Length: 348
Image 1 (cartoon, rainbow, N blue to C red):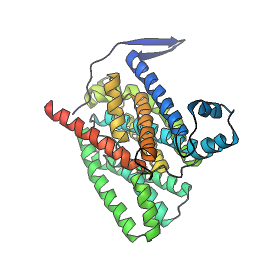
Image 2: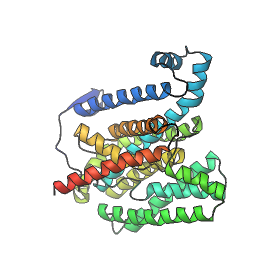
Image 3: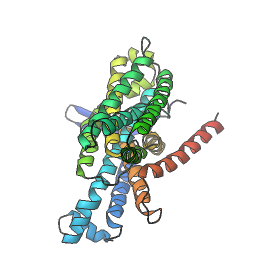
């Protein structure tokens, strides 16, 4: 399955020597997604054991709240929401880059081993070195980069083939998941229990430090991902066509991998290896925008929306007990994957 869509109308925005092609439908979809993210965020900050009305929530965010609403929102609910939004945006943007790079809708970082590598690195640091956020985050980033280097190196044969990259990534992912299971079996019972909860993907107990990890990655790497948009468009045409258009294929592919892995690793360090957000967000955004290319920004907004909605359901939609957000996202994403594959089969 390749990612091919007909071009859609756009407009050129110019400012001095700078010109940017704006896809009208993508802009409208992006604004709609942003509005939905804000709406879901306000609902998330309002509901709970200590209910706060939407107007009071807005007043609190603007600095005019009471002592009680300030504590509930700024100390309890806002850090979790910001972590969900930043991690969801990072997963969505990373998935968009890798699906464009592999020209395959299944080519997301949680399918081809990069998220599993970040999980292995974080889990190794968690069980063998220390449970502090700095160790876990560093381990996740190192693990993601090492797994990307291994997959890329094994797939390289005088260049990298998209399908070979996906197949080797799936194989490496299985090896890493087995490694994670082995580490859990050898760990102390209490440590293994805490690590297992993290491996499912959870936003429980998240503070501003967790939000800062994913947020920093989004601030630093999302602009780089946007700058790589044109090269991704050229790479989707195939290596031969991209070279004919003057694109340095391997350097461009390596840059896309580095940015995508950085986003996925930072998100994994913040919330764990939450499944299907990186897979579903770019596909849903692309269906809405009908635009060509990776569509990084709409995918990031869709990822933030999916993860925040999943967390809202995990907190308040399953009775009194909270479920890990990874369970909810897996249910939603698994249903979407079944639907997508059934549609692909019907279409031949």
